Length: 120
Image 1: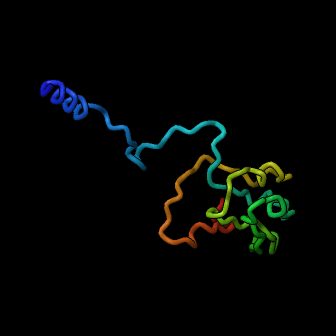
Image 2: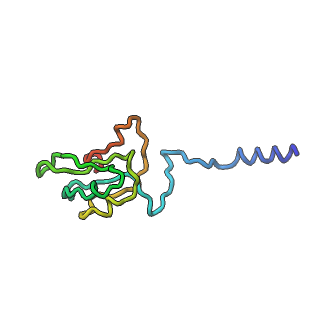
Image 3: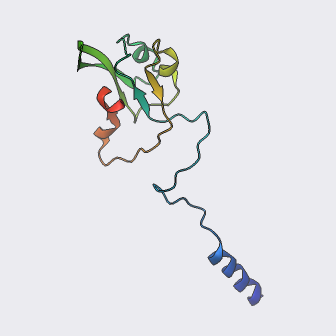
């Protein structure tokens, strides 16, 4: 009985840890994983299709100064996002995409609201 207990303790001490050493090691993601949004501001045509399709009202169009003047582009609140990818599907120029980035650690809730410049 005691020998079995000591044997199981030794196995647990020698065994490789099951947790990852984040952020040095990152988890392998599946092909269909949806993470933080990415916006190509040069190809955005300010159609607001992403804002209209969003079921959670996560996207709002805000004015941004660009080389061609002031344009309206999507601002995304990541706290409210369902990551359903409807915005990506409806975008006619494919300028709004979901990446595989999943680093959501923030110290202030306001940092979850991403302006168009932050999505590049």
